[in-house]
Image (cartoon, rainbow, N blue to C red; front, side, top):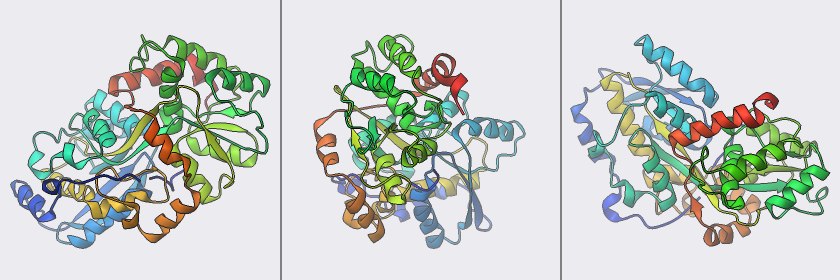
Length: 394
């Protein structure tokens, strides 16, 4: 689904507020474009719905730097090959990448990203003061090669049709028993292509009490055994989350893995009935998720200087208010001091109607864990593809 994602609060330290004027001053070490640039943006995370208004605001405010943005979309697994080919030919025509931690991690492993920090730290505020704690946790995982632009505690959650699921699973054991008794009625998407899919996998080690939730190769013995057994009762694994939502809404599946944003936004869009419910499993921990802005290696200095100013502007409170969207990354803003009242009215209305009152307590009462780091995440994707679902992925 390329039309979704998004809401948190806090207190922004006064010294951390970014004035665009100071960013412009810091950018003077870059050559100034001789004419306004066309900036090419590729989105592999469905993030444009949130961030495009903020990007367009920059173009409106700085016509001397940006004439227009050109947007394209692709899947996360396609991105690395595309960038590698352009970099090998010394013809990089992608200026800015909007990505989840899947493609970000793959790009870090392959050395595809410009290392922005600490080299260009003067163009940005104190990030630890700027970001919400969970978002800053995700920011550190980028190793200076990307910037969190929206954040969510994410999941894993289970979404179900209450008219068809009367005995709602509340533990890993009861979910497995339900799937066995109702074959092909439970579904999650391939983790390498799906936020809810990888969040479901990353959340299970906490639910199952595995040895090391941050080490999928040596610390997930219970998780891999569980996923293998559960897989006996799953018809196939979609290559994206949207298919799971459609099949739940159409009645082909009765329970799917989801996240807070993927729960709210598809109900807002009418893909999933508004009355469908969510639940958690015993031992539940949130596993955070974020979208990032990253810059491929190989773009010209004059373009890099402009792109870094664009990134800094997206991290301002006024632009972060767009990240509420229609709850695709609920909650969505990554920085402090961005209450829902600052969001566009249609965002406020959507979240008030389709949000769930129980999320406030779930967020307050359960720990938020970081997702796997880059190397561990890539290793998890590979092991899942080889041993769990690669042969059953469509």
